[in-house]
Image 1 (cartoon, rainbow, N blue to C red):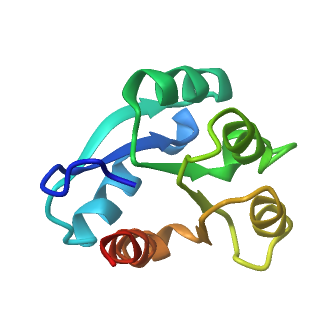
Image 2 (image 1 turned 90 degrees about the vertical axis):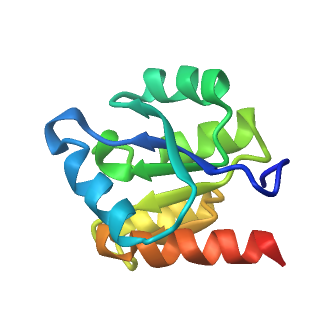
Length: 129
């Protein structure tokens, strides 16, 4: 995932504007992961795609509510356009339709917002092995 072992984990946060980033930011702080850097934020699908290629994040934290009518569509788009992308899909419930769709379209990890610290830790620990 990261090319430089000492470099921080670079995150792109994609969350609906009305949700605000504060909640996600608090979960990242609770993750107690040193060296996490938010390199980009997006509130729409088109912003997310542009920022992904501008910022080259290690992990995309994607709230699937960004597109309520097609909750996992952005997962599929990113995986097709950038097959090596690592995506954490935040869904209302792991067993929800959005969770199933995100899983089917290739999300690397799926969970609710409260799971974000553990999901990040799991992906970064797996990368270190």
